[in-house]
Length: 170
Image 1 (cartoon, rainbow, N blue to C red):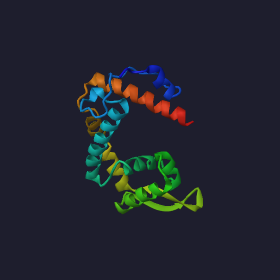
Image 2 (cartoon, rainbow, N blue to C red):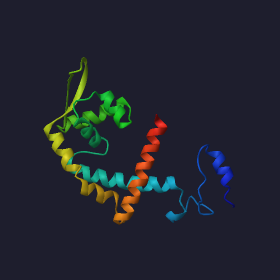
Image 3 (tube, rainbow, N blue to C red):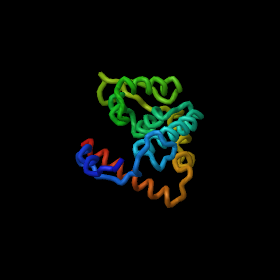
Image 4 (cartoon, helix red, strand yellow):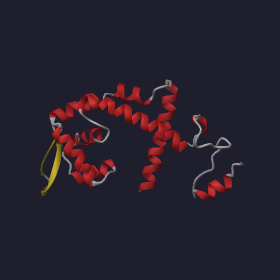
């Protein structure tokens, strides 16, 4: 089977054609033969699993941890937290309830609008997030198998991807 760059470019408007191994076998166990999306998904799932195991030491997970970090700037409504974390308000309600049971957040009147409730981080939540988020354990979880130069290149690529996604969302 020949790889058809023109067909692939036409299938994804605005996408540049990339050179893929020929042929690409979606059932292959060799990661060199996988599409980029499968590679990213595989790595992200492993990191998410390892990160959740790390955060479990503080009764946190990948959903609650960034909420605490957003609250370092001050109380926010659940709607604001949902928007900042890219989830629905219903999902954020469950995340906040879990953090509240752990003693990491409180819900009270929003000082900006008494009709709304605001979520605030507690001292215990601030401490847990600070400890769980120390840089080195997080870097060790995400950079396994990479040397310093690889990590620097990966970071550049990831920053480019994040910026491109933000631009596409605007």
